[in-house]
Amino acid sequence: MSESAPTAADSRRIAEEARDRVRFEEEALELSDQVYRVARRLVGSREEAEDLVQETYARAFRSWQQYQPGTNLRAWLLRILTNLNIDRGRRVQRTPDLQPLEEGDYYLYNRLESTLPDENPDEERVIERLSQDSIVEALSEIPHDFRDVVVLVDIGEFSYAEAAQILDIPVGTVMSRLHRGRRLLKTKLGEKAVV
Amino acid sequence: MGCGCDDCEQMMQPYIDGVLSADEIAEAKDHLARCPHCEKRFRFEEQFRHYVRVATDEPMRPELRERLVSMRFVVPPTS
Image 1 (tube, one colour):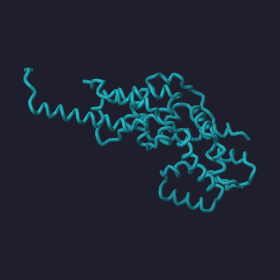
Image 2 (cartoon, rainbow over the protein chains, first blue to last red):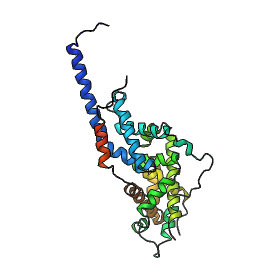
Image 3 (cartoon, one colour):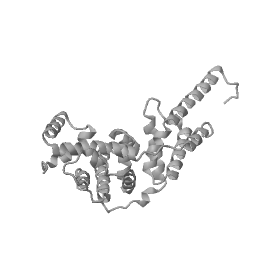
Image 4 (cartoon, one colour):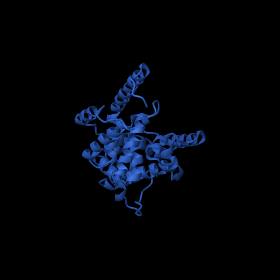
């Protein structure tokens, strides 16, 4: 390897790379609010979510060249984030055998409807029975595996395929966890409803 | 009360997710048109999904955004 002055081609390449990097950083930063919103529901507190997002961006900025332009950057960032979240050892907290009981899909509606005096109320009236806090709380009580999928699909609005890619699980597993996760959420909310 | 239609309850999630086959969608629509009991629960479910998104929404603090912005170019690239 000879130490020679950088050629014009070298300088061009360096300038191009710097430009690509700036573009990547700008695109990633534009998504930070959306990334945070998902992160906030994957973990228990604002502080944890902020740490996680910060770590995610540190890693993303470091390994930006591994991102393939044209693919879904938001999914790529969330993939980093969920991996970091898992690395933090949250799997240890998992309860292995205890499978929570869940009710059917109509359970929550039926339960809330029964708290209203009028027969056959409008569904808007029924949904008003749920407080914002109760939803946040119920979501945080769902076991991680199910919650991750519900948060990615129903809050992050990722497709089944994207959620599968982010969590590195088969699409069929996404579907079954989503189905159960949603039912668990509604079961918890129904249990909280004051009759 | 109710149609006692367990199939309908089973099809609710995939129906709203838009992953049913054309035949299944037709079947679900046909049933919903005839069954106010299920129809009401489907509408509730759609609104519930939306409400979950709205109720759990917590925007990022501007401080965090500033911190992220300040990390640009600071971290050296790998390899």
